[in-house]
Image (cartoon, rainbow over all chains, first blue to last red; front, side):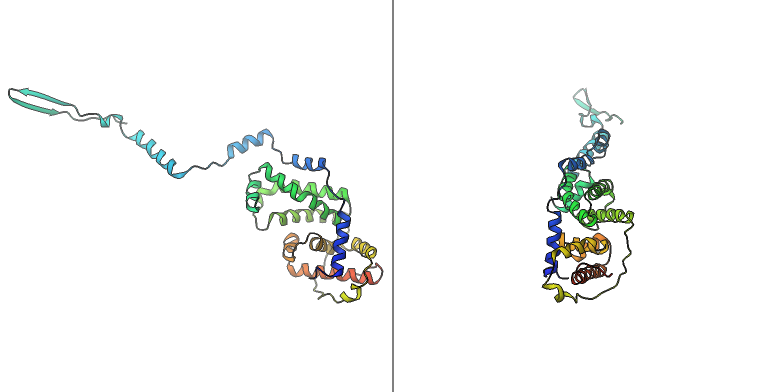
Length: 103
Length: 177
């Protein structure tokens, strides 16, 4: 389709002439902009619906640590209780059963 | 801001994205709508309604076409409604009219005033194509996306519109459609 012949040029020139002075007023443009200004309710909804990005590796490590802390008893690393009984020249070492707190 | 970023921001309803859309398209749309409707007030109303629809429906825009094509489509549809209300709407018979064949006849003697009045009286089904093609510099493909018609139909409308203008020029500004 021809765009550079004389008729095309004239059509384009006429369209440009007719719209040369046409421009929307600042007031009109401001009213358009007001059309999408958010009210407080929308801002709260947006805040609640906002997308957040969580880095997967640190999140996974954190989650694992949290699970470990909640599952593993705190006293698991405490020293075993040993009792030594001296009978004459003999020494009897009694290792008491190790118990940890049940979670 | 690239189109993808702009679309993402629009969908998130970020104000700076809407601001950019208004700044980029409001005046362009106003001019196109004025050329179609020949009425400043109505053109303003169409622009306003277009942006209301853009803001309201952006979340359902799937990105099948570019943002500007989508915005133009909305504006053109609203303009058509306005024209329909004026009861000027005529259905377009999709027929291929071939390449221009009166090119040389009017090439050397174009009377601008006659052409101007012919453009004003040209049916909007042709003038909207001519406006998008010559004034907005859109391609046939882009116009077909805006008007949701096949490229063949657009070519046909452009060709027919030009032919009508040329024959009007030959007859001193009278159409014989």
